[in-house]
Image 1: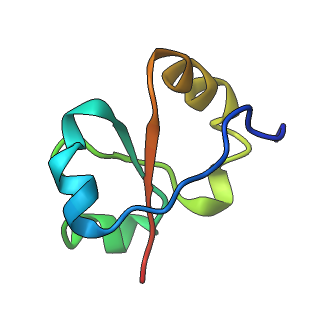
Image 2 (image 1 turned 30 degrees about the vertical axis):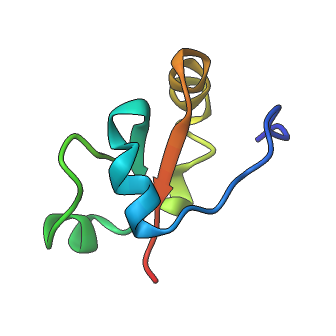
Length: 72
């Protein structure tokens, strides 16, 4: 996968919730974790499949910022 053009930024849960409508939400947890609960509208792309989804993610990033959700 290529280096991102924009730097990554960490957000608190509150900051992300306040700006959720701005993002395409990508949940990188396993399908099992995702099915246990996820943000509304989130797309499940498990971490090990990010390379396969690079084209789709790049297209989404061209439309606006991505919010990646992972296990804490």
